[in-house]
Image: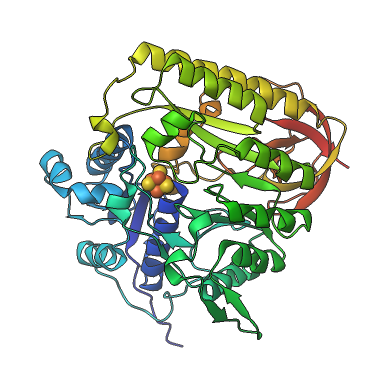
Length: 479
Ligand code: SF4
């Protein structure tokens, strides 16, 4: 019998930097490459070409991107660059003249074409298989779902609109189809992401689109969240600005359709600083609204990020922020020190805050939020909560990033989340598995550590009785 020898597929290594949105782009690119017959390489040495998906959000992220490119050149030599920093092709080429190609964000066709040129595919019907939900870089049990691109705001410190353009929403029926496929492939948690989730559908004039099984869905955050919730997975909403209609999402949480979780990037509390930042949904009554939300959904977890040391921020502005944080009792807080980004309007503002003052303010925000977090988590000791298992101890851990095929969603996250910098305290429990409660988004929030977790596997949702807590994490045992 003749056996067809399959050509060896070319191998692509991937280094993915930046925010969860960039991670979704990486997934899309890899899905296409996989469909074209490419295999992934776990290390530089085995890769025919290395793709570096860069982040250009902050100058420090750009430097991190350049370092990643340099490492890939040194380790492999055949490097294609894409992502936000691809907008600055001259900077990249000046430093690394040997880079094979540079493409910008969302230029899927171009980046795929560049990989084809660097390592031509070996087409074969036998290897051109794609798993039903695409080749995912995140663990199968949770998936990021990008609902729109771009942003209609022009916050003074941000260059995203100039990179990604104005808001462009995906059709709600297409998003729902993708979510259904992800769930069929094992996803237990959908993480809804965009630059401005509350604005979803504005560009589509909130039109209605027919649904597969009859009925229709409006291109609106509330309607989309409700339909996603009906699919049965956990639905977590990120980057929600507190526009008035966000109040309508809270009842969906009370009904159990959407997780009682809101990621709202407030960035500051002082009305004066918020005005200078040109922030959207700058609502002086937001504290009252948070109280009203919590009255409806007592276990609502709110995560946010804050900028300290924005130009013109006075001691009084900063005290306002600290008092506000004490009142708001947010569950998770990340902070970052203002950093001028090339091209941002804020760079022209007067009264920069000296670095030592920025650092003091940063430390004060982190100390306060660590105390609030510790108190809130301590209040959960003795309760029983749902936990989605991410890792089980006796399974091999996923390969770490920088070696070819593993994402490093580190840029924005690393900047915004001081708890990632703080060492977790040593704990006396023998840990058997690690997961997350409904209050914890992957990578950016806390975790729940379980002992006696025999028989559990990633993706399981279990009831856990909480026995202990610290500033960030909970410790418990299956109930
Ligand atoms: S809302 Fe502001 S910070 Fe967010 S992407 Fe738009 S302009 Fe940037």
